[in-house]
Image (cartoon, rainbow, N blue to C red; front, side, top):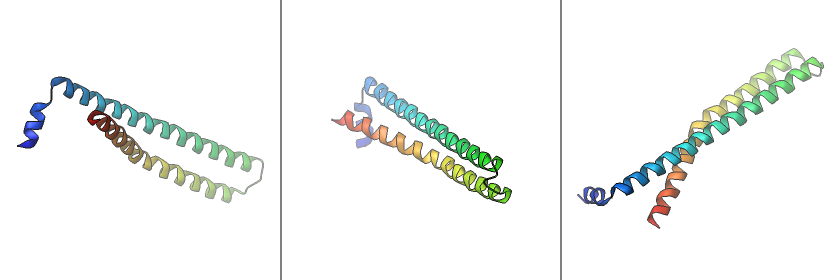
Length: 104
């Protein structure tokens, strides 16, 4: 009953502001996700490039190259799979900060 009364006490402008807060938190979270993806992709490409360069210059054996590329790929996939959690944490932080500002 108290929740129903609290909801009814909200004005249309309160609802619009809450929607805006959610949208801004969503945009920030998506931005965090894609920035993380781009940084991870850059690290991956740089690492693969370095390994290939070393192989071309005969600094590593072909078996070492395969091992190194597998390790690099594993790390890249680990980074990629963590990105959704990073985005969710960012969304929650933004929304919590917006709600804290709203209550202040």
